[in-house]
Image (cartoon, rainbow, N blue to C red):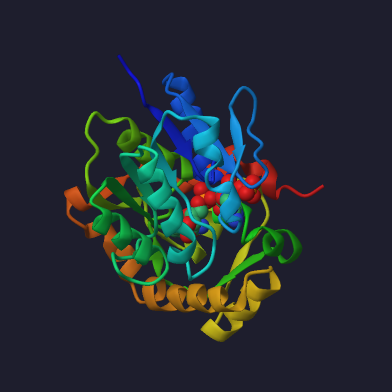
Length: 286
Ligand SMILES: NC(=O)c1ccc[n+]([C@@H]2O[C@H](COP(=O)([O-])OP(=O)(O)OC[C@H]3O[C@@H](n4cnc5c(N)ncnc54)[C@H](OP(=O)(O)O)[C@@H]3O)[C@@H](O)[C@H]2O)c1
């Protein structure tokens, strides 16, 4: 007899969370979609949950007392542990046994931002998986979107560095595998796409798919900070992101993740060209 088996999907209306919801639905697994609005696409069940409002953290457990596993997506920012630790403690007290945490390739246990939450899970001794995705393909339709539409270009401080672009589908699949496995892996690993492309190479593929030339402006870190703040990112976060573009991508560290040992990476199937083709209407004008 199954008693507790509901998955709580934080960030459940976001890129990876919404796909995870569809995968769990297709597999006939119970789940609850958490986000600030509390909305979920029919026929899914949603709940109001806001990291910045502690009074909402208990809502999921009131809505479904059978939650025993959580997909953890954190909001943007640097001081994440103070927001997330009270929820992790609460979840454990309500019977949650496993956590799947999404961080990023460069994050490490005990490091800044996501890294502190990673370490917190280790310290709690719960069952866990930490998924460390590379750059999302979907950035071309989000962060890079307005510049593509307005100026036919993208900008970055990545230079000629290559990235193992990964799709939200592949990340959600990795999360699904961990959440539904009989026994979770209790590991951290990279989540990568199948191919390496620099920004120059990526926009060449995009150009051929949409029939319009998109170029890549190679910015300095300072110029890129300005770009990020223009699209509404907080300044401190813009600085971290722009300098990461330079330190990790331009200097080849992101590309080197492709050579990680098999047991330290999950390599997805979806290619960047597939993503551009299936979503080409995003960048078509008029
Ligand atoms: N983009 C990349 O290249 C990249 C690379 C590596 C790692 N990552 C990591 O991926 C994660 C983002 O995952 P994602 O792309 O699946 O999500 P996403 O598409 O950015 O969506 C964010 C989700 O969180 C919810 N949310 C936002 N603020 C919230 C708050 N204050 N309280 C509760 N919920 C909130 C949003 O819903 P509502 O707006 O309805 O609340 C939405 O469901 C981040 O941790 C990021 O660092 C991104």
